[in-house]
Image (cartoon, rainbow, N blue to C red):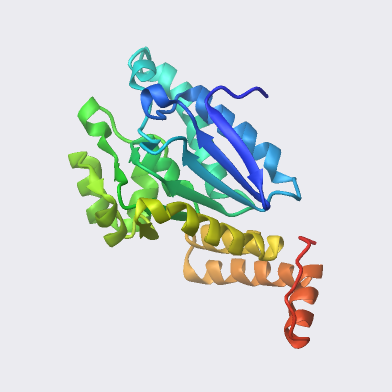
Length: 261
């Protein structure tokens, strides 16, 4: 697939998906989401890719939100209800992707930008980043999972405050309420993202996947069911070559070399 809205890069088993629409501060449209989906599909079974980083091209914006010029042309209820679930499915694809996904939040991350960040496993923000879900000011609400993932992450009260006021918040505030996991000076963003991505890339791929499945699925269930999910994921790890390698390496006091088998 030829990409118009994103740029891809692979290095050291880390694939970077950069939204690249500088004229609109990396705002996303339906086609952008389809390109993200295509890129993720191409990386899913690639043994040379173990970690995904989603970011924005340039140093001004991660994703500034949805492209209002496109959204404003939507005809109404039926058209939106036809296309929106596809976008939701793509954010769910990010959330449940079998490989770790890091959001490198390098600037403005509003609306759909915050929602895509919420779908990632780890969110790392520059101290210059701005986040929020300001859709209420346009007469709408978040539609790519913001009303569902935000309260699960920061609590119902704070989520309602953000959704209903549409306020923008600083990276420092996003870090304080748990919306982002790490915040560093902009000049240090790449170093930290690379450090964490390399760490993840060195870990056993199957166990990484099982860890995500156990947490994501367990969070949707009661504790008893969650523990059953964890037990199954734990047992599946025991059937892998990587489990043997990890334990043997520990006993032999050497660095393990995981193959994803």
